[in-house]
Length: 125
Image 1 (cartoon, rainbow, N blue to C red):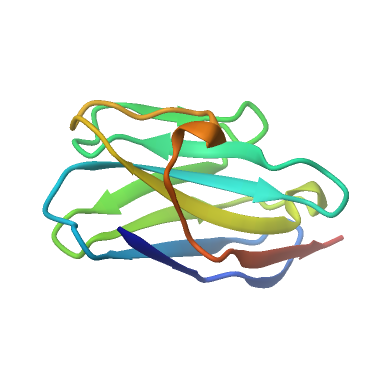
Image 2 (cartoon, one colour):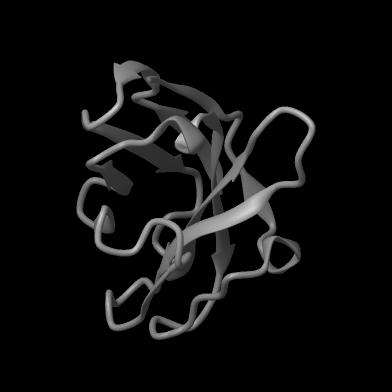
């Protein structure tokens, strides 16, 4: 599966953004979806993940209650709605996917096989 992330930008603290990740290729198979981010000088970290069926969702503690992951299977797009953004959310955001059972997803970046190119999110104070 090929992934194309979009929706990043510059926003003030407290604002919102919605990231999108469009999947193409062998999308008829079920695949797990995740979002990760990497700030300058830091390691890539987990943000959120969802299973194909939507039955399992995981969030990093730092974004719980502010970010929501969702997916539109018919359109082969998954999203990350980010509300109440903070300057510490500034990072390059990556979407990721892995062919998996419909109820499976994971939080470890090493588990994922496919990655989008990243979209920059900058939150000003």
